[in-house]
Length: 170
Image (tube, rainbow, N blue to C red; front, side):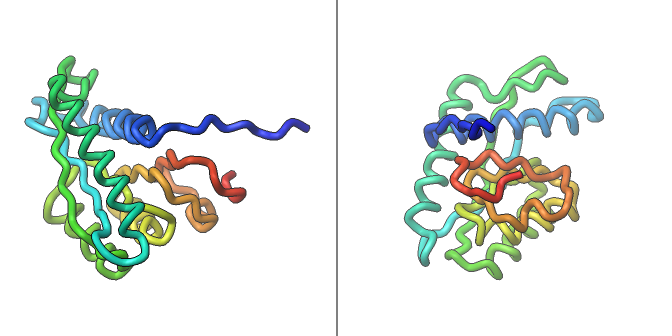
């Protein structure tokens, strides 16, 4: 039996892959709307302090870099509208706290009305977003979390694009 080989994506390519999934999610929602939205709102969290701060800030900077590059080119192409739509990052600091992250993910979904979520760094901070995304039928792009518990229940709302560093992936 051959071992599965995984290509290692550079961080900016991981963000680009996540963005492509986000655009796909927006397109399916947008197909039901009469007019194109003015922008695609991407909700995310980052940690400025605590055990996840260094890695989280790097991931967040990569997402901002991607959004700036995409917007410089007119936005993300959404086939349903036949045009590019700019992206806007809506972000909050969860301070490496799962309880704070839970509150902030709820805020992104219910108050900020983001179109798609991008999880904060790692399995710990992603773990609280997975059930919230499913509950609210919101696409959650997970760039880094790979906890086994993400795969114990079927969900149509989690897109795990993380680097394959875990042996628990299905």
